Length: 576
Image 1 (cartoon, rainbow, N blue to C red):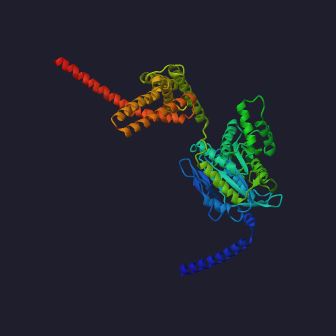
Image 2 (image 1 turned 120 degrees about the vertical axis):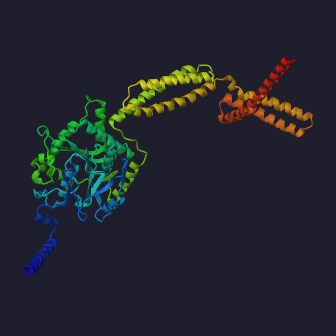
């Protein structure tokens, strides 16, 4: 009886709870998205523990990051066209002009973390002062976590386009793009250059995320990546890319340059200043950056706090973040995403819409997947290559100088055996010189340059052989000598056939004699005039064929017969 009563009581309780839940859902359904966010308090996100850090995993029915450029292994990337089409050909984006903001830079420097603040700003643009939200609300959006391992690979875009209005009254779609961090222990220089260049080419605003300072190596990497992009665009003109912002995180010198955009202007002017005292290399880097972008700015952002950097369970709650950092974020977001500051994506000064951006993605990815672009190299590899190329050039130059002394223009003809012996000795000398030079990159790296040196020497030797052969007066006189001998033989044969009554054969010999005389006259004209050299080469080739297939075999056969006859006579005399 008690069990039955408890069961009935529980059933009535569940019905009441279900009724109240339906009422709540109906109320929520009638609310705006902003009202729901304000009333529900801290966002409940799904997640999983990974390497001691909290990873946000979006559900399929909510806005989420979409992998657009995906790594397919072997340091190659491919475009997920279907996913990109769903975003850029959607009703909100397809015909509207687009604003594309991308964040790029070294890995584990907080790019995705920053983008999630920008997502929150765009979601709550109707709350200009309170858009950061509840202090205990976790930060969601692009996946991020603490730790030393990279999180983002390839290029991601936020699945939700944000609509805004330009000062002109035209509605545009804002798209956010996250990129794979550069210089991790799994990416090559080409990987880093491809991702950075591609994002720069596609973005209307490129944020270059840096830590603490703008260092010279940062500028050199930026020069390499942007030049790679400019090369892909086949453009040498200035202002190829639109807007670049150096975002300096963890800025520790506010007493020199204050946090924010104002301090950033002063710091950037000092950093990119070109003076006569600078080395030419430093001047070229700064000149290149100023030429590549139509607009270059800088923003200095403070340290976010110890808990952000060191806590394995930090999930983005504002209460755990330093107030100065939040003030900087509050200033940073409107600088690029407020209606008055939006930068529409352009190609050659013409704004493009979502459909046009999709075509750009396809075209640019095809360029980077092709083989027309040179392989970008790291500083060590570039130095090692230059070092080995210099050693290769010096060794090849030594071979050429030594061989010129042996068979140069003023030197007489040298027989083939002696020429080969000289070649082998000089070749060994050149290879010894290459091996003796101290080179970077190690033996295995230098081996490819040694092989190229051998190929160069082989080709040069063929040239020297031809040069030497041209000095052989007997070889030079071979064609007229053979033609003259042929004329004599044909004349004798013609006379013999005529006397024995074979007139048709005699006539054929006469025609052949006339052809030989004509060939000799034409060859002599070509030799002395230097004109119609192709005809002279045909005649030489014909004579060489007769020499190799008739005269030499005939001479060898006659010589062998004569030697056999002489040997037989000598033996007979000894017997007698």
